[in-house]
Length: 274
Image 1 (tube, helix red, strand yellow):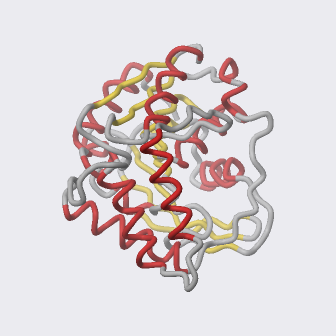
Image 2 (tube, one colour):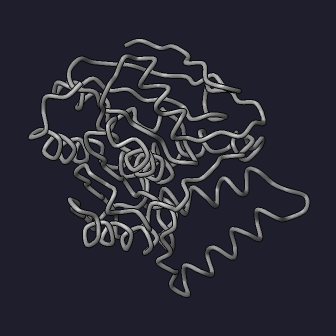
């Protein structure tokens, strides 16, 4: 395993590089950092892949100044620094959005995309009344005076680890504790976010997704995530949705071995790439 920093304008990105073989890049969720992939890396490395993960700017061990940026440029800078011409991208939540956006903007760099409980820029699947009530409560806690970062983080663990409307503690304690530990610093000191979004957004440009796509979603997640996966399957040129009944949003933490098997089965026929 190699750890290093990659310098990009206004930022130092912390990168972990493990294994050998065709490269797979893992992009974490907006409530997490590269440690959310701890369970997924070993089976991918054992399957013969080079696995790269990094903390996006302002998250984990990455730093950032208050500057304008794009996650797409940051990701391609990581690829360049590591000498990777083409990679398969695996993105959770916001990380999935980054992966799809990069595949559209820089198709020559992306072999395939696996969205894991992934966002899709410009897609609005709406909310059920129950989900809207949860979202409203999130806004209330987030805007309370005085602000309580611990209370917000605990609420978000319930949403993203257990799943919206699921019993507290549905997810394993180790998953809940890890999500809390990664997310609390982000709520205590939110990183600057002056990102320039892909325009037009990905949902309006699915025909430009030239690579194969696998969209993995959990029924215990917000319904919009499942809708996004099925929307990709219906409208992207080469996409398949995989919907699991027993997981929520942090699928790579809940069932890393099962996710690794799905990724290996999906990208295996595309080997080799570099």
